[in-house]
Amino acid sequence: MKAIVQDRYGSPDVLSLQETDQPRPSAGEVLVRVRAAAVNAYDWHIMRGDPYVLRLAARSLRGPRFRIRGWDVAGVVDAVGDGVTGLSPGDEVYGDTGESDGAFAEYVCVPAERLAPKPAKLTFERAAAVPLAGSTALVGLRDAGRLRAGQHVLINGASGGVGTFAVQIAKALGATVTAVCSTRNVELVTSLGADHVVDYTREDFTRGASRYELVLDLVGNRSLADLRRVLTPEGTLLLSGGGVSRGGRCSARWG
Image (tube, rainbow, N blue to C red):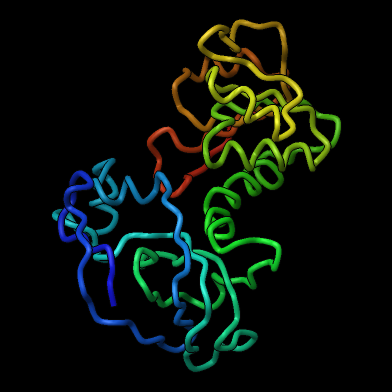
């Protein structure tokens, strides 16, 4: 099969299209014929081995443990390994590949529990864009941030992959959403349902009078003191991204 292969860390020049062996599903795995794969900041970080701690964590200093990049995938089940139930050849699925990556290829083996049936209304391309960005936004707002109807949330980086999901999820949870983005993306985040949009090229949201029960920072370009300033006394700050791979999340609560 054809795949995008990488043998050392570096710029996109380290990636090459090559012929490689088609994988076979082990017990608990599903072989997916790839129809679409998404590119996330995670893939960029792994490609470059940046931050350096990623190399230490992977115990692989010169190049990634797995040669084929790609975390998010959508496609058709080609075969299933022993013990897999609920999925059969021909099923349309989407999900993420887990630690092994491998979605930038014609075929990839994926743990069965990391896949779900693709909604019929979604194209493969749209489904592939959901897993990492969508789950980061959902878990951050609903679970870590415990966002409730009637609360006010500010999303810094609202026009990015996670941010666009976060705006929509926050609205679905009944929150009032303030989105921070650049001028060219104001129309986009407004169309997604943001109640208020702050163009950071014209206004500093940390200097305004508004206060929020939840701040989701997806950029990492402001100090904790700046972000604390816009929280209510018992507000919650969620940090995601800003150089942390895999949409890594952490939270802080004051009050």
